[in-house]
Image 1 (spheres, rainbow, N blue to C red):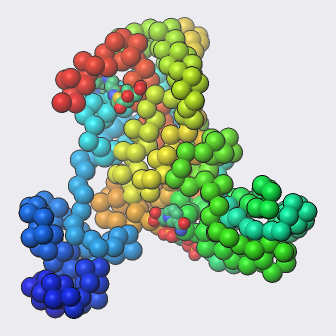
Image 2: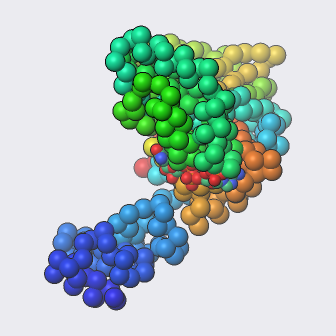
Image 3: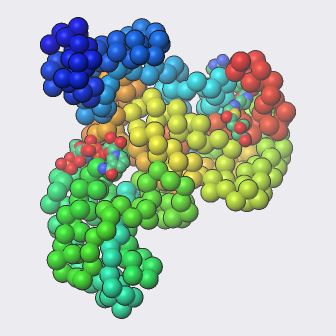
Length: 402
Ligand SMILES: CC(C)(COP(=O)([O-])OP(=O)([O-])OC[C@H]1O[C@@H](n2cnc3c(N)ncnc32)[C@H](O)[C@@H]1OP(=O)([O-])[O-])[C@@H](O)C(=O)NCCC(=O)NCCSC(=O)C[C@@](C)(O)CC(=O)[O-]
Ligand SMILES: NC(=O)C1=CN([C@@H]2O[C@H](COP(=O)(O)OP(=O)(O)OC[C@H]3O[C@@H](n4cnc5c(N)ncnc54)[C@H](OP(=O)(O)O)[C@@H]3O)[C@@H](O)[C@H]2O)C=CC1
């Protein structure tokens, strides 16, 4: 069917709006939806329809597509970082609508370069899925937990039969009365791994049900914990746990941030540590979510997982007549294969970073991306703390953000 025929078919009730791809190619289906939406709402949809990729490639990523959300993308860097998987310098594309953000992260990157670079390491790599089972009582719960503890190797064999990349790293039981949770943790290599871990865990759950009295209630029991603020991710980690640090000489702090190491260290203690504690926050940082969200949008990550990406602690202290600062993100969930990383715009962004697709060895590209994002987020922390310490936050946003 052509676009006119698709529009008529929806109006007549012969075809439902979400079924248009069954009767036409994905671009015509999107065009028909735009026309129907425009007529229904009066909205003009020219920009949303002016996307630059073949809609068919986005079919695994979206349903009911009528266009694309185009978010401006800018660049920060070079990011000078000595990592376990990356040896800088690297550039990082960031997509955002917040004026002053790119300038700020870029300023932090410039200061890190002037300071001879940052160091970053992935400390842990474990994507989790935690199903919840029903048992009759706590005795059965204890029995089921014990069986799982004793049969992790067998569960690994079953889970890993569903994937040629994923590896089960461990299973941690949690009992609450007659509910039993098992937090499965996987090395998902270069994939963020949520589909991979979910499919693998479903297979393992079948074995648990066959061998114990437990009955599966839900494949995700929220102890995972995906896309919700949760202390378990801050403590145990989820996806990559990554740390970055840098020692910035006094003269670099003064010339780039217009303030002193002492003032930045005090702002960090009173704001990021004391203020966050008083607020009951999970993230003891200034704006790590800013860099994580912008990098996620640009590089095709699952944007809802910014929730976990903001579980981060920033430290700052004076050392060797300079400023020592570190950032540790407990749960940074990133991939360079799968999900949104396959889309054309996001592939180009990953090419800029130099980490598109599977790494050699597997997992090294996602490790490198995690180290680069964490170092950029550290740069953002330094710059915002500098702006606060020198009282430049409001003026910067008046100048660049309005
Ligand atoms: C805006 C600046 C950077 C000016 O800062 P400045 O020191 O006046 O800038 P400069 O013109 O002297 O340039 C210094 C460096 O900044 C970079 N830079 C400078 N301008 C640009 C630009 N246009 N585009 C790209 N890069 C730029 C660039 O790297 C440059 O070095 P160079 O490369 O030239 O050697 C500074 O005032 C600043 O960083 N302010 C802080 C703004 C900020 O961090 N905003 C974050 C968002 S706030 C928020 O969302 C969260 C919040 C605040 O609510 C969280 C909380 O509660 O804390
Ligand atoms: N299912 C769910 O509950 C949830 C799903 N999501 C969505 O899941 C998607 C991400 O899941 P994810 O599993 O990462 O992606 P995909 O489902 O796209 O799967 C990626 C696959 O790529 C293959 N692969 C090829 N090369 C590599 C490599 N070097 N390293 C790792 N894997 C490789 C693996 O296949 P093989 O396994 O055969 O080896 C892997 O399973 C996103 O779209 C996200 O939005 C998000 C949250 C929850």
